[in-house]
Length: 210
Image (cartoon, rainbow, N blue to C red):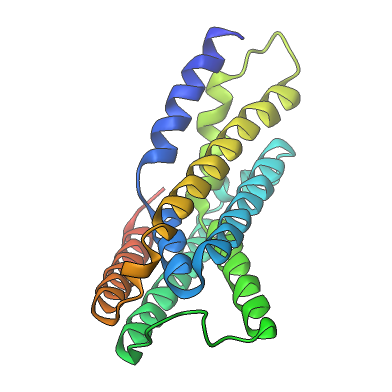
């Protein structure tokens, strides 16, 4: 592989490992629905990343770079959605449920997993920073001698694959402590923490400029 690919892999690895909204969402899904719900959240996140990558490669994301209004609309929508999920987590902590899935029937579990997927998808689709990453940072690692579109999609695929593997491993690791996390006092603490983090991330997104 070309040197710029190795450089991109290093950057993508650092960005993937830094905890953020994706990590908080996977934690929240593990609390509410266990490992499978967390994996559905991870799939939603990766589908959102894929959508941004395709839009950037086709030039559709450029509107977020040239239009302050479009960027602000997406940014505030994403911030509001993160805050909404955070409030839901805080409300869940107040309910003091002991086990997320033991009393659910199959239709409830399916609905929970669908909700988990949508939360991961929507959170990423409404994050303009992801679009700008693919639009402005990724091209710096593309060689003009070869197919720009092909290289862009290849590098984006590396980033998405890293996210899929890392978040899946994190969900698997976290679910190993499910018996501890389902204790009412521990569960309330985790839900309060993830709720506060999601609200804080929403506020930070709303405050940030391009």
